[in-house]
Length: 126
Image (cartoon, rainbow, N blue to C red):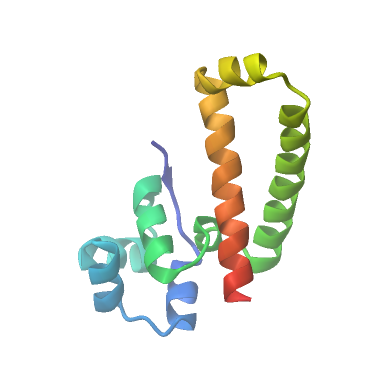
């Protein structure tokens, strides 16, 4: 697991009107950890980033990058997923079964599903 700085955590938290105590409770992250990330600039584990993003109801990338950059990255991700889905559609059942049983195949399918869920979340929010 990687450690990352979350330069936009405070900005996103304040824009959502969420206090440190509330975020701490919702994300199950200590206030000391949040203080370290926001004020001192300590890095956070990717798992902590994901818990904070979920508690704030934002994509994890929004804690790292400006909104326009996140939008561009999600669009590129969506385009890549469309291409992958086309390739999967052209595969035989046997090829799909073999792919689904492999580690790379499981990662591909999980990434597509995560992208689909994120798009649904954004559509519901928008």
